[in-house]
Length: 140
Image 1 (cartoon, rainbow, N blue to C red):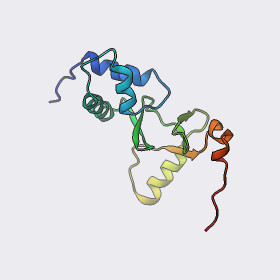
Image 2 (tube, rainbow, N blue to C red):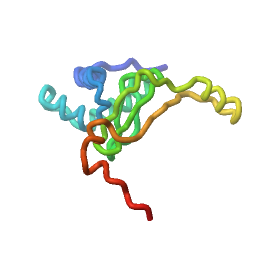
Image 3 (cartoon, rainbow, N blue to C red):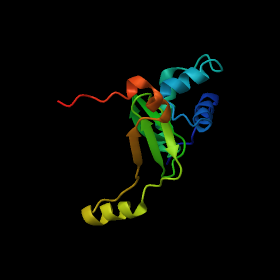
Image 4 (cartoon, rainbow, N blue to C red):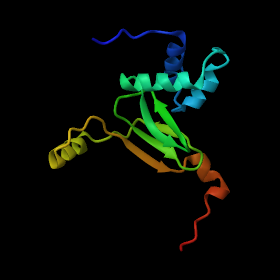
């Protein structure tokens, strides 16, 4: 028998902060945002609650960007863009991961696909404008 989910103001605040931003934040970002309103909040509490939300399908990990795991409250299949210069993570609402690809993987390899993601990596418009980010690397 599954235990009842205990509600707390901190847990609700963490989920609300995640749902209230499009930043795809890290646990550290959420902690910094919430600490002034919840002085007894610990970074460990944020991490535990993010794991709790993930287990229940309320949030998803976008992956590790610049050394920090980033999270998204939108759990329906959608695409992302990750800037390799500044670490910005953006939703791409007009670009959808193809369901046909999921079926092809299932049929060809016999896998049961539970989740699919499509992530693009490159430089955002702001980073493209920066002269130091436009230098080409010398070929070895």
